[in-house]
Amino acid sequence: MKHWINQHTLVWRLVLARTCRNKLATLLIWTVIGIALCLPALLYVIIDNLNQLAGEVKHEPQISIFMKLDADKTIVDTTKSRLEKHAGIGSLQFVSKDSAWKQMQDDALTDNIATNLKQNPLPDAFFIQPKDHAPTAIEQLQHELQNWEGIEHVLADADWAKRLYSILELGKKAVWVLSGLLGFALVTIIGNTIRLQILTQREEIEVSKLIGATDGFIRRPFLYAGALYGFGGSLVALALINGIITIFNLSVADLAELYGSSFILALPGWQISLGITACAVTLGWLGSYIAVNRSLARLNPH
Image 1 (cartoon, one colour):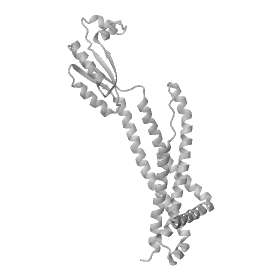
Image 2 (cartoon, rainbow, N blue to C red):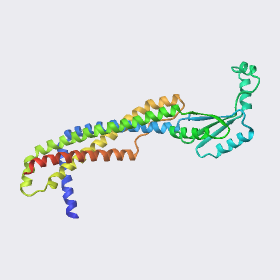
Image 3 (cartoon, rainbow, N blue to C red):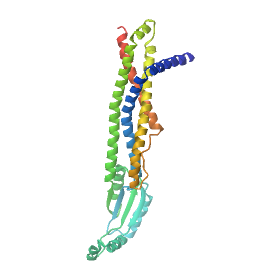
Image 4 (spheres, one colour):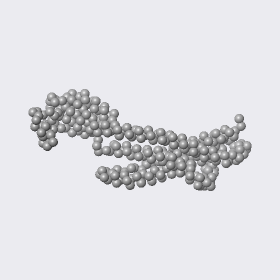
């Protein structure tokens, strides 16, 4: 075990020494990787913030329930009791046909219309807000209520929710596509960087193989170098993301204040930061692994 630790420690020291000797080149590679990682990560953070904002939006979807005109008080009371006990309903407001008729008569805009009517044409109505704002859940609740006794019609104001969720889903898919493309680009960039390092150390590798060095021994420092490139790039990406979001918040705070809100974009938490770092290190290791294996395949005799 001690021998294994010493072996890997020596490799890390070798990699860090080479990195320190090529500070400018390493910094440029980290910057390129950081910018490539920053784009999808920043888009994901913004979409995640918008998703949280959608859950807190004040204009929640509302379902309007209109009873039949001939529904008696017993049916209305039973319907009200069932709605109050329903697990999918967050809040409930009942407007009787008498109070709606009185309001219509008192309203200056509809007073003339009410005067020409001989009897009350308005039904008893319930206005509810569902707990689950997902469009599918709202539609399911709407269809369920429509089949209740005494209910004439159920209207669901969920069009805005459908549009919002569709936009957010489209944004998530765009993040995955962009992440895949840039991930492939990072593997290529890191692989080419490692390949150039292998070419500069070709003679050293050939001598090592002549004295019995295994492919694993030769491969190890390059894999660690690729992982180090990925780790450094993730730090640059996180710095860029935090800086960009901080700048955005200067304008977002002013805009939110105009609407009486205190909303600001949240900085990425430790889960997102850890995910970015893990992805970067994995991509760096993968790019190095591919480059080293291809180079060793050319050096090994067939």
